[in-house]
Length: 515
Image (tube, rainbow, N blue to C red; front, side):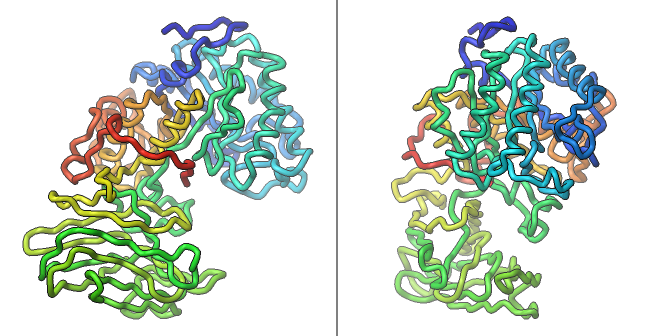
């Protein structure tokens, strides 16, 4: 379908346009202090050579404004962005300009001058500056076709209601469309880009952008900027969409039991790898009504035998275990249950069932706060399923948002996803192969974070992969192939018992939220 447009013409099919975009985030003006080297023509030639057609430019407003004065634009810096837009046109790569650090908001807080330490969601001065920046870009690029250039208003909004957020975004949208009515504008969903905004569904030339970083413990393992990530267990893939929280009586609103139905023989060893414990908790494992294990954990300033790290917070000690605790069945059972029968909360990383030579480990991936546990069953192949027999797919939330977008005719695109370089390479590649297969089966355009760097396919500084010399870069060919050549159902998922047939599965819709 032809989606081409002249400067004054709209893109005729925005959903198709979004689905056709494939590319990367470029960080040449991402942060004024440590990522402000600018963009290069070679980046665009490489992207074209890789048969991709999209770049997102997450900008720090401080890189193109006078120091301490966000109302004063610096022409010499804006010319660098102009050049980038020209390279996009030259190499047939669509450019999407994004305010990653906008006046009044950034997902990565930092110390700013007092006159800029404002809140975009509540401060009219910040809102006026925000709209003014977009008005400047709208005027500057008013003659660029919407096929060549789009805008993404603000990166990963959070801690704001949809009503307030949309009202502010509409001010920027109106300012842009007053100058260029047909400019495509991407609006990030709330919850760090994890939700859809139904209140924007009928706005002309508006698409929505989602970010795909779940399971977060896999994509951001040992990311230095994520508190606690150094203590997460080494990620594996696949992971199951089961909550890893067990809430105790102190969290009575969330308290619930994880139950697994099946045929469990005498001699089966049940092993729980405990993650983190808040203050105190008691892990209870039962086979039917019989208690196999009741293990109390009390967090103090001492490691003792149960913990590997002391974590002191404003709520008290919340220590890290990452240790196995086990019990063995002495008789046949048809159900296993896992509960926290005292105290606050605890997490479990995995459950292993071991009987003779048979050893199955189930890794739990859902770390959503407050989500109650459920009942599951083990099928004849040893795979955990929902009680209705459906697979516990790791991309359930993404499927739900795609379904919601389709039902409401909302054009969407995944403008950020990726895996940090501390996650084992094979795990990262297998995960990205399955995720990208999901993107293709659901006609989702995408932009990897990033092209060149710790999440990227170039110069990622991974210590456990083989690089290919490519135009002066170190190319991770396996990751590139995972993104662009993996099949509709990846063998790693089949091998581990999580069979991904996305188009054959029907799920009830629920509100989509990701971290």
